[in-house]
Length: 260
Length: 260
DNA sequence: TCCGTGGATTATCAAAGGTTATTGCCCGCC
DNA sequence: GGCGGGCAATAACCTTTGATAATCCACGGA
Picture 1: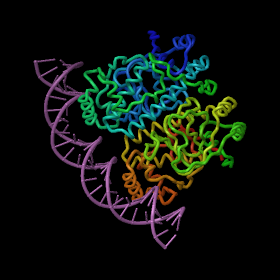
Picture 2: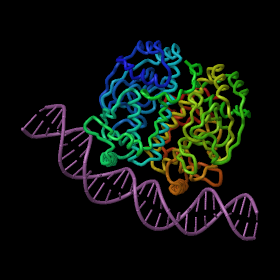
Picture 3: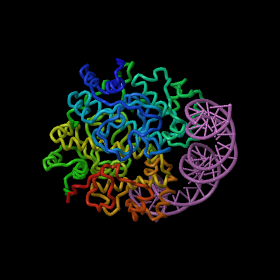
Picture 4: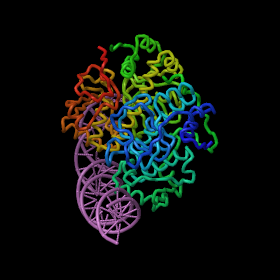
């Protein structure tokens, strides 16, 4: 594992959703794409655009925001290995703005190529569908986060989620992660005001649950943070690498129900 | 339209997502199912269950709640014609509790039958996928609702959404809808306390935006409610049937076919 | 008919968080 | 080497909403 090619994080992510063969990985490697770099808070897609390609995140973080400009609410965050706008593969309209959180490197892949890939590899087709469903589960969890937690546990839960998702693609192994976010970004993701985000972060620091200096963030007490946030990673639907394969997911999702 | 068979609302819903032929409708009609009735606040599915069938809502409302018991937060609501647990067709684990809001009639259809249906009708297969994506868009919108609106506009937006979704399957044509909800249900869906839900409803009544007596709810001033909630139905991804095209929404929703 | 129960309503009090403004720091830029 | 901009930290004040509790009302059962 841990190959060095551009899509290695995507391959990790997909492999966590379905069994991929060497052939599948080979198909992935050969997928044509255009690499692009974006600066912090730069827009990648705008509300109302039409799309004929997907945006795979290679490095950094992306966010969907409902309003373009300085202070729109963040409705989801992508980490490397994610396909931020996978849903456009099936419904090509864009509602929301896709904004880079910190510097980001993305690969654009035409929808056509992904569809071909789906046809040639049932495993990848299935993994893409499960990725879509996983995104949905994450979204539902954000609803719960905003609806039932206060600022402190909300921020804690968000940190847990991002850490778990990074670990799923081999990042943040030592609970140390790159954090080009501003406090206002965190505020926008937790739907709190920037000054209250500041209060909240300080509280987390005071409890020794968070070190955030410069562009690096470390979590000194992971079990403590998990306990505070009542974080249960089950909703992510991931088989964690380097862990005992506890559940062999059943084979219910079959590629043949997905229109090409 | 408005056929009387059990799945007519589902057919309406699917037909709004993809072009269905007479054959497709015929396949739907013949789909085997088990009808079941549930009482208010009765659980249909529980967190942790495994599932080998889908739950189509025929009459009433269902809700997903994250905690079972009296006061769990509601993370989504189903209206007639919805498949409340469609995602289990692809990932058969259940996270959350499916609870009836008021008396409800549902039809259970084995996953196997839906998969067969998908194989025999590409249009239905595609419609199911789009339904899944539509659910995702609705969920994203709930995130926005909780994150960026206060109690009053939040409740208003929820009412708009439910009304629009009902109209999509031929209900609530005159902005009069059955509402077996309690105020606490509304509170759980808006993530506010029951007493504040009461304050909010009274405010809506005072503004003449809502009549809610007994089990019937009417909206005397739809444009006013839409304005207050800043409701834009585009995210529902629906072609509205039988309605004056008052707003020429952005090109995403095509209105080129309007069945009689 | 009387009573019990669940939901709606109202009042009071307290907490969580929003708003605005000011200050200071760091860093890149001229 | 001074300047300006973005970001973090802090303070003062205010609004919204939550919690608790008491009352009231409608309805259905014994």
